[in-house]
Amino acid sequence: MTTYKELLQQRENLEKQIEEARQRENQSAIDKVRALVAEFELTPDDVFGRKSAKSSTAGQKVAPKYRDKATGATWTGRGKPPKWIDGKNREEFLIG
Image 1 (cartoon, one colour):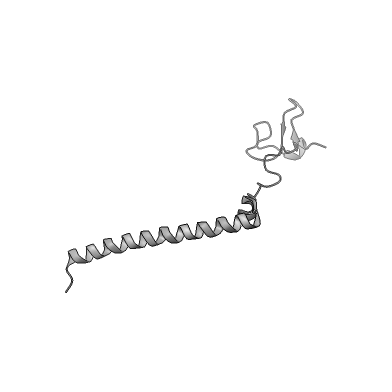
Image 2: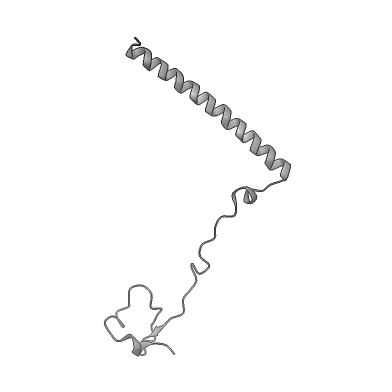
Protein backbone atom coordinates (compact mmCIF):
# COMPACT_ATOMS: atom_id res chain seq x y z
CA MET A 1 0.00 0.00 0.00
CA THR A 2 1.28 3.49 -0.91
CA THR A 3 1.85 5.90 1.96
CA TYR A 4 0.64 9.47 2.14
CA LYS A 5 4.18 10.85 1.76
CA GLU A 6 4.79 8.70 -1.29
CA LEU A 7 1.58 9.93 -2.89
CA LEU A 8 2.56 13.54 -2.21
CA GLN A 9 5.93 12.91 -3.86
CA GLN A 10 4.23 11.33 -6.88
CA ARG A 11 1.92 14.33 -7.15
CA GLU A 12 4.88 16.72 -7.03
CA ASN A 13 6.69 14.73 -9.73
CA LEU A 14 3.55 14.69 -11.91
CA GLU A 15 3.07 18.45 -11.50
CA LYS A 16 6.66 19.03 -12.67
CA GLN A 17 6.11 16.75 -15.68
CA ILE A 18 2.85 18.51 -16.51
CA GLU A 19 4.51 21.93 -16.39
CA GLU A 20 7.40 20.77 -18.59
CA ALA A 21 5.01 19.25 -21.14
CA ARG A 22 2.90 22.43 -21.15
CA GLN A 23 5.95 24.59 -21.80
CA ARG A 24 7.15 22.32 -24.63
CA GLU A 25 3.76 22.28 -26.30
CA ASN A 26 3.30 26.04 -25.87
CA GLN A 27 6.65 26.66 -27.52
CA SER A 28 5.76 24.30 -30.34
CA ALA A 29 2.47 26.12 -30.91
CA ILE A 30 4.19 29.52 -30.85
CA ASP A 31 6.77 28.31 -33.38
CA LYS A 32 3.99 27.09 -35.72
CA VAL A 33 2.08 30.35 -35.42
CA ARG A 34 5.19 32.44 -36.10
CA ALA A 35 5.97 30.35 -39.16
CA LEU A 36 2.45 30.81 -40.54
CA VAL A 37 2.48 34.55 -39.82
CA ALA A 38 5.79 34.90 -41.65
CA GLU A 39 4.75 32.65 -44.55
CA PHE A 40 1.52 34.52 -45.24
CA GLU A 41 2.82 37.95 -44.15
CA LEU A 42 -0.04 38.34 -41.69
CA THR A 43 -0.53 41.41 -39.51
CA PRO A 44 -1.93 41.46 -35.97
CA ASP A 45 -5.22 42.72 -37.42
CA ASP A 46 -5.32 39.70 -39.75
CA VAL A 47 -4.80 37.31 -36.87
CA PHE A 48 -6.81 38.96 -34.09
CA GLY A 49 -9.18 41.21 -36.03
CA ARG A 50 -9.53 44.90 -35.48
CA LYS A 51 -10.51 46.09 -32.07
CA SER A 52 -14.16 46.84 -32.14
CA ALA A 53 -14.82 50.53 -32.22
CA LYS A 54 -17.19 51.98 -29.72
CA SER A 55 -20.65 52.87 -30.86
CA SER A 56 -20.55 55.33 -33.72
CA THR A 57 -22.56 57.76 -31.62
CA ALA A 58 -20.47 57.39 -28.47
CA GLY A 59 -19.04 60.70 -27.33
CA GLN A 60 -20.99 62.78 -29.84
CA LYS A 61 -22.86 65.85 -28.70
CA VAL A 62 -26.63 65.67 -28.71
CA ALA A 63 -28.65 68.67 -29.86
CA PRO A 64 -30.60 70.35 -27.07
CA LYS A 65 -34.29 69.54 -26.99
CA TYR A 66 -35.43 72.01 -24.34
CA ARG A 67 -34.63 75.70 -23.69
CA ASP A 68 -35.44 77.93 -20.75
CA LYS A 69 -36.71 81.16 -22.34
CA ALA A 70 -35.86 83.20 -19.25
CA THR A 71 -32.18 82.25 -19.02
CA GLY A 72 -31.44 80.66 -22.39
CA ALA A 73 -30.23 77.48 -20.67
CA THR A 74 -30.70 74.29 -22.69
CA TRP A 75 -31.10 70.60 -21.92
CA THR A 76 -30.88 67.59 -24.23
CA GLY A 77 -33.54 65.62 -22.41
CA ARG A 78 -30.99 63.09 -21.22
CA GLY A 79 -29.86 62.52 -17.69
CA LYS A 80 -31.12 64.29 -14.61
CA PRO A 81 -33.36 67.24 -15.52
CA PRO A 82 -32.09 70.68 -14.50
CA LYS A 83 -33.94 72.59 -11.79
CA TRP A 84 -35.48 75.03 -14.26
CA ILE A 85 -37.48 72.23 -15.92
CA ASP A 86 -37.80 69.67 -13.13
CA GLY A 87 -41.45 69.03 -12.26
CA LYS A 88 -42.78 71.37 -14.98
CA ASN A 89 -44.57 70.66 -18.24
CA ARG A 90 -41.73 70.02 -20.65
CA GLU A 91 -43.78 70.86 -23.74
CA GLU A 92 -43.51 74.53 -22.77
CA PHE A 93 -39.72 74.32 -23.12
CA LEU A 94 -39.48 72.37 -26.40
CA ILE A 95 -37.20 73.88 -29.02
CA GLY A 96 -38.70 74.34 -32.47
